[in-house]
Amino acid sequence: MPFIYIVPIELEDHSFLETLEVLISDIFHMRTKRGEFKVNLQEVFDARRSQYNSSLVLQQLIANPPRDAEKILGVLDVDLFIPILTFVFGEAQLGGTGAVVSMQRLHNRFYGMAEDRELTARRLLKEAVHELGHTFGLIHCSQPGCVMNSSTYAENIDQKSSGFCPLCQKGIKKEEPPRAAHRLFTFPWWNKKD
Ligand SMILES: [Zn+2]
Ligand SMILES: [Zn+2]
Image (cartoon, rainbow, N blue to C red; front, side, top):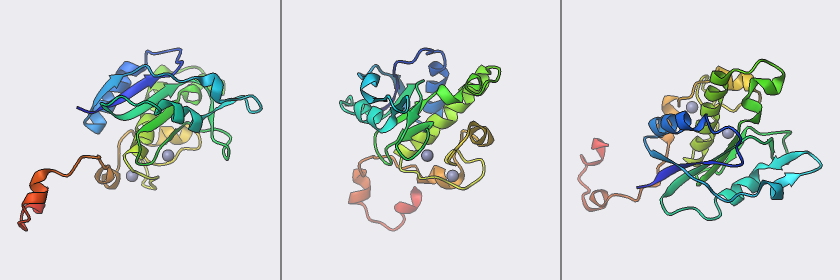
């Protein structure tokens, strides 16, 4: 039975993860599992930018996936970047296994405002679902409110929901092997059933 692994990476505060696991399981109709994978953040630190290279984090995260891992979501709280952008909330492999999301810029305190744990939890869920959506093959969506909207600022995250618009929901591709029945029976009414 394949799982979505939730992997804290040098994460200080694990208290958000339990709820995150439950909600992700509900949204993707898959079971989730907490994992401890070897990721060395010092190796991906860029001293010039004082940030961590998210693509290199991803690379380490998916280096030795457990057999039952359908998807692997790394959660950390260091500032992530990809070379062409000043920062990223997260990154994922389109149609692949791995995704990462950083909590650092999801906290209100990062912007000098009073911390709001509930808001942080909601932002984390949305960004986690967004990045996992990419691993299921979804690209960015212009539908207002859809979780696959791209977010440049935390305000953008707050404006969208944690759910997929109907089109994105339909587009989630699960890498299931074709069922034998579909190959054996080619009656015209068969396909209409699903
Ligand atoms: Zn995205
Ligand atoms: Zn959408």
